[in-house]
Length: 144
Image 1 (cartoon, rainbow, N blue to C red):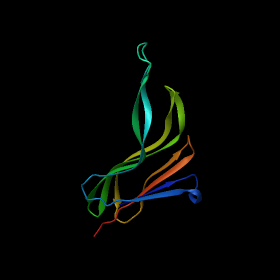
Image 2 (cartoon, one colour):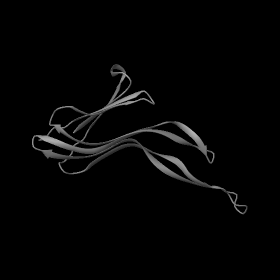
Image 3 (tube, one colour):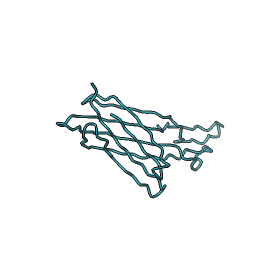
Image 4 (cartoon, helix red, strand yellow):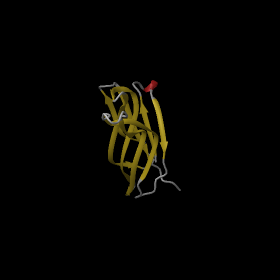
């Protein structure tokens, strides 16, 4: 299975990212790439007897996460899956003196039937808030 992400405001200026996965029929496949970024979730102020503040963090997955399942349906293939594309766009408001990251995220859950070997657009997204455009295309071929 090949997944192509076209991300950009104009076709000529777009950035293509292509991922090729070997997927067994009826077996869940997970692909993740990126980083885990810390974000402050809680801060306890020091008590008079203790001068050290306690800060707790959680780690957020940032990058590309693909989760899919393929099932043959005659000459076609049923695709069930989710895509999660995220990146850090800057620093937000400070929490306990630490600026948490601002994360831009696009999620897609898909349940579609596609033809073998034919590039198929699963989603085309125009985000009016950021003026970003994203197209997700999949091509499924049978491995020999």
